[in-house]
Structures are given as C-alpha cells and as structure tokens.
Image (tube, rainbow, N blue to C red):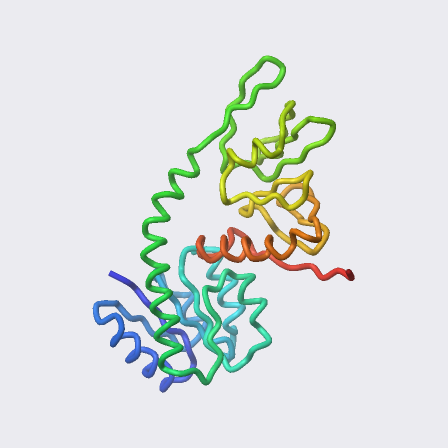
Length: 252
C-alpha cells in the first residue's frame, strides 16, 4: 500500500492536497506534517513526499537534505511559490518541482507519474540488490581478479592501459575503455574519451571536470549536456543520490 506524506505549514494546503490525493489513490495511507522538524522526528517511512519549501524553522530544502541521508528512495515532490530553488531541488534528487499556483490537471499528471515511479522503484529495488552483486573479471599479471561493479568509482585509460579506481583500491590492466563500458552498464557514463564514471560516486561537476568520491575525472564539453540529463535521471530513479551532489560553475 502506497504511503504518501504532505509537509506544509498551512492547514488549508495540507487538507487540499490530501483530498486531491485521496481521489486519485483512495487506498493510499496519508501522513500530515506542519513543519520540517516534525517530519524529521517521525520514524515513519514514505513512498512519496510532497514538501513545501517556505516554512518557519527548518525550510523544505534543509529538510530534504537531512531526509536524503536516511532515505534515498522516497519520491520527493516540492510544492512552492518560489522558482529559484529548482536547481537545488535536483541536487537532492527531487522527482518534480511544482510551482504554485498550479492546475488540478497538472497536479494529477505529476502525481500519476510519481505513482508510476513508485511501482518502478518497487521492482527496481530488487534489481538494485542484484546489481550490487554483479562483478567483472580482470586479468593482470597472469592473475584473475574479481571486482564488484557497484564498487567501481571510475576508470581511465592511458598508454593502452585501463586503470580502475574502486573503493578498495586501484587495478591496472591492458585493455580498451570501450570494452569496459559495455560490461558496466547504464549507471556508468563515458564523460571523456579517457574517462568512464559511475554516477553513484559523483560529488561535484562542471563543464570540464567531475569530482568523484576519490579522484577527479575529465568532462568533454560536448558530453556535458548528456551527462547532466543521464545523471538527473539516475538520481530520480534511485530516489536521490547517495550523497548531496553539487554543480560547480566555471567560465566557458
């Protein structure tokens, strides 16, 4: 059964949103909170969260950042009269950003999409567990080494050698980055002809560099737009990144 929370400091808004949700998902369990502090104090978990930004005390963006540290799967929808927070919303893995006032049709469209995302996530969590157990075999110096794909931070190539940087250390072997790219799957992105990055470990980025959990990868300017698109999609599917991620401006 879907669990949906509404966090807004206006009683009328909470009641209005709750009535709209019940018409669309009559079987859903609804939870109401009037502040970010109240939401963060609960031990309940939610599949979908509708969160206002302008609230007294801890605002919605601060609340979302703390929420992501404990739960990266909740589908987060910001509801606000302010447009200037839209880029920060993506940094915390927001599914959508609804600007007041909005029509009933718009709200219904977004909520239906969130419901579909919830169903996909339910299936995706099982696939994610399987993904974390997938591995590749690398041969170097006559020794075959097994590396879990989920542990790979990024890879780079130089002088016909591929260097894999993982959370457990580095391993180098003769090979092609394009072959490794085919093995690793959609959670990795070829940001530069010399670099292949794992979205899971991206911390910051701009048009020329990507700062990973360990190390820095290159970004080709022509790949930047596709990287941002794929990275935001990755975060929305995962329910937010495993850490707070930021864009770093740079003069072009």
